[in-house]
Length: 289
Ligand code: TA6
Image (cartoon, rainbow, N blue to C red; front, top):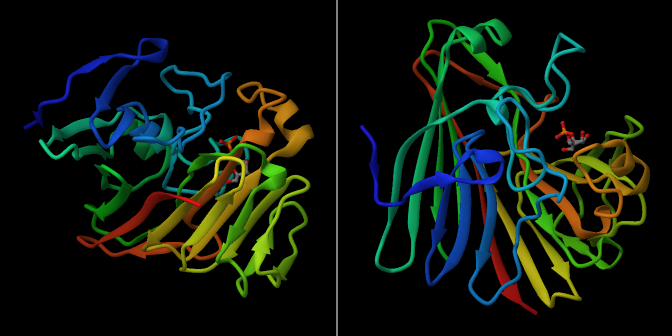
């Protein structure tokens, strides 16, 4: 049963898209991957980044916005040829609810259940729901329910691509004191500095349940990334060489983005018993500085 007062119209690549424009924010959501591709609060520049080279097509992940990485984060756990970051972000989800209220807020819920194709990739029964609450803030809540008869373990991320004016002048506060896995070297290191800064390819899995804040001096704003049900925060910028190796990432786009991802990384998977559920959430908010 679908309840919606928000039209679904063709978007990029002809994929169905919800375009939600209220006094509080402009938002775009694709049922393909349950993918939020745009969130722009009133009087703000877009908060989410999407590559100009992004591919919008069945079966392909969209480069930018908030990809849903599930039921594994990173490479396939056992099959090196398997899809990175799981199959949720390339699946067609079912739109359950899309309602806009008079106060400018909106609520969208999409679901994905196991099917023959998913069971071939990952032999478990599940119901996945992404609940999206839109207004002056943006909240995504990814709930996994185990509908099978045996426990299963997942790793996951809400792989948020944030838009910044210049990565070299961008700072992240709130990670000090957390240890992190440097995915480029495999080293486990302490985050000693109060501010995390960026001067090269950065791909880190911070072991922390705390949120953090991105300071963008040129856009004169802070983006706060709060989270729940998350033991790790992934911070990623591909920098020059890796950006050039990705066909769906413009060679000159790397200075304009930073991923700050609420995650449960493979090092600390979440085990869900039959009939139980787990929710991973993130909330974005913006304030002027
Ligand atoms: O979240 C960081 C990361 O795991 C990087 O290692 C990089 O691979 C990025 O995700 C993008 O992955 P994708 O499969 O979307 O190209």
